[in-house]
Amino acid sequence: MMIGVENVFYRRKFYIVKNEFVDILNALFHETNLPNQLKHGARLVGRWMVPHDQANTEIFAIWEYDSHEKYEEIEANVRSDTEHLKRIKDWYEKHGGRDYVMKEYILEMKNEPLIPT
Image 1 (cartoon, rainbow, N blue to C red):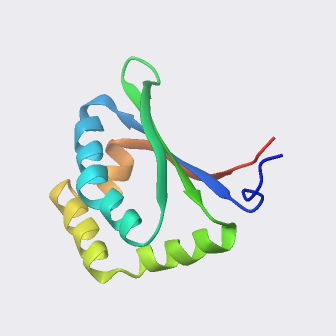
Image 2 (tube, rainbow, N blue to C red):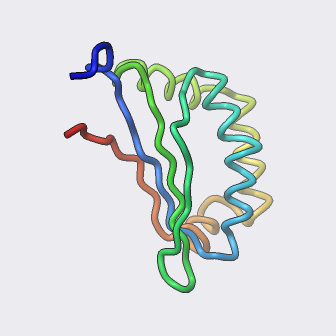
């Protein structure tokens, strides 16, 4: 038994994206999303990518929080950060709008809790 980690909460955020969009999405993560998550208290365990098939790549990150409640608090702060929301809106507009990006480049996106064994 690990002492002090009973309430730790982990989540996995993943995307399946067209290969031509990988560098663009990675830049968004490093320049915009990562700094905002860290600013509000999220902890990145790691971020990786693997080929999904010849045309697409899976990109995923694992995040750690002190508890599920702390995750919800951090996410509420991230989603109410007006400067961050403007940067995201501008990014989508630069790439054709949110609907276009989700239809043309991001084939799947999930945010899922990880359950300890």
